[in-house]
Length: 153
Ligand SMILES: Cc1cc2nc3c(=O)[nH]c(=O)nc-3n(C[C@H](O)[C@H](O)[C@H](O)COP(=O)(O)O)c2cc1C
Image 1 (cartoon, protein in one colour):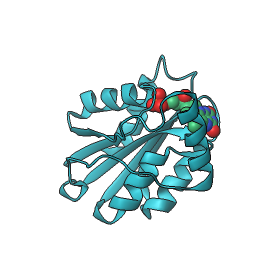
Image 2 (cartoon, rainbow, N blue to C red; image 1 turned 180 degrees about the vertical axis):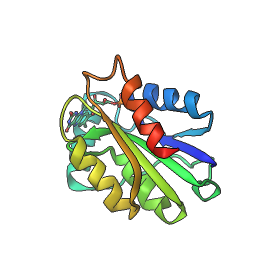
Image 3 (spheres, rainbow, N blue to C red; image 1 turned 45 degrees about the vertical axis):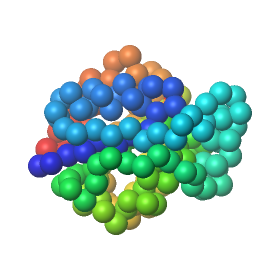
Image 4 (spheres, rainbow, N blue to C red; image 1 turned 135 degrees about the vertical axis):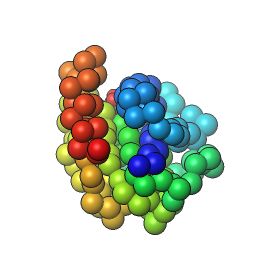
């Protein structure tokens, strides 16, 4: 099965998890970037607002076509009990090119269930596997990652 991991990360937490999954699956990976639109305190506020309002914002062009993959794993930080805006934008732009999908999110401690639900809703894809990691899980994510990957295989 050809797998692509797509993720956005504002402060590298989701990035760390995406890289761990990538090293286990040995698959392609693509980071969604937007030239730091959500950096800093102002970016935090803007991100919270956009995620709450369900707004999209520009992302940089992607280099990997999701249609080339059997499965796309999408990772996002939770923003205001929703997916991060750049991932919302990615899903809106690419949902019709995604075959099968799995998703994961990282957060401080809450809103992950709504964020994961929203990812399924926006993509229109039934999720093969989902995973959330709170700040308690971040230092020791292996067990949750193993379960997530076993459901994919
Ligand atoms: C705009 C914004 C909104 C957030 N909202 C939530 C939230 O609703 N629940 C939560 O537990 N954490 C929330 N967080 C914290 C992040 O989800 C958490 O720190 C995440 O692991 C950061 O991942 P990253 O380093 O990949 O960006 C929010 C962070 C930002 C920037």
